[in-house]
Length: 114
Length: 114
Image (cartoon, rainbow over all chains, first blue to last red; front, side, top):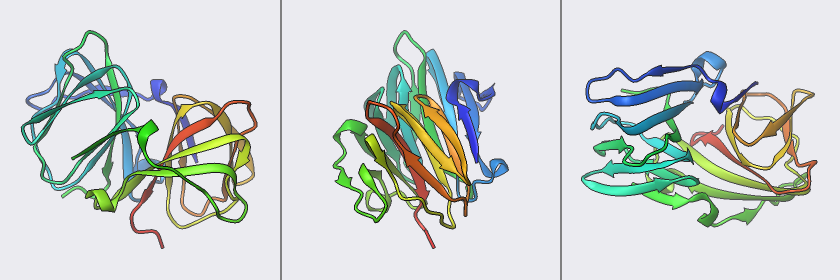
């Protein structure tokens, strides 16, 4: 059992090349006793973005607050609070905040990522 | 890629024995191309609850709106909007809405549940 408010999870900057104005906070993971998948919280500042990349696992996303663009396989989708999105394996994707408030969303990944 | 607002996902009543006033909506699952885990939305009416049970996999929870009690291994925890909770494998747990508004939360499970 673990209980935490999403605002209280320790966040760190995303330092990967191609990222700007973005933090990640690992809310639930293997370290907490979750064997299969992990919940992270992303906060993207206005003008910020994550790297354009792809990988062999899925993302499952729930938007908490704010809004922004999810680019997926060259298509752009606007994500707002309450929206749920799936980025399927191998899809090239990027999150980009084109608004004027912080964009906050949950993004889950499997623990085995290879 | 799939994009949907959480309010728009088709829900169905939880008919399992020991459940009352609760619906489940499968937002993202294997059917959508998510190989590893699935995102469901629960809505528990005031006075409603899920069965007290346990299983070999984890739940990862994010509370969207409302509040209620998560009973886990005999301890009671109040979950409010913005709270994140992990129910670890084998922990006996139940969700119970003791308030007066609908309690809405996301609850994720691995696709392999056995």
